[in-house]
Amino acid sequence: MKKIFYITIFLFYCKNTDAQFLDSLNLIFKSKSGIDARFESRFSVYKTNLIEISGVRLGIAYKRRLRMGGGVSWLKTNLQTSTLVRNFNGEMEESIRYLKLAYLCYYIDFVFHRTKRWQLSVPIQVGAGASWFQKETKYDINNKDPKHFLLLYEPGITIQFKIFKWLGAGGDIAQRFVLRNYKKTSDKLFSPTFSVKALFWPDQLFYQLFPEHKVSKRFGPAEW
Image (cartoon, rainbow, N blue to C red):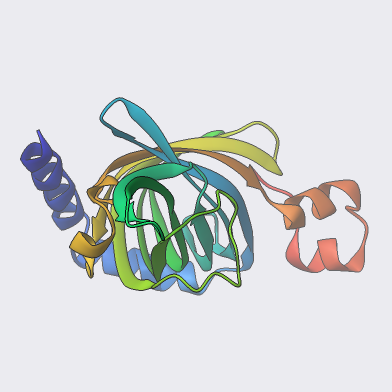
């Protein structure tokens, strides 16, 4: 099943990387830009358990056809592991630790189909961060447990629906590849993912609320 998913993603990208695609990018970069702000959660399933990674994104959008930017993500689900350790009395006892993950990411998202309210796009996201195990469930910035450096790569396909000119919702399916220290953390991170997103365009809201403002006249008006 995974091989079919990888081949599908590969063929999909190959189909869209031709001369016409590059010409379209050139025109898009010459168009006016706006703000792209996102709050999202990415989910994966591991042995019937639902794993959630949350994140915030902030970037720039060109003509609503190309979006790029960066953000931060973190593992929200408390994933635990247990090992046997020897206590001060020399007896073996169970030690429970929780997997934590935090990373910075960069994304680029090209829209290849668009109507008034619907969009289909091909996002690519890369990230770098760290994972570790700790005794507490909450993130502890003073935690001294060993950190393992990670590189992540997540290609996928996204669908988006605009409720208003400034507010929308979306989702995607992707594959998360962990490119370094994979064995030192957990295979729970290396898996297909799906996500739900709340999309907010503050510039479009401003243009709609204040259409006569000089900023709206220069960069607006609000558009679908």
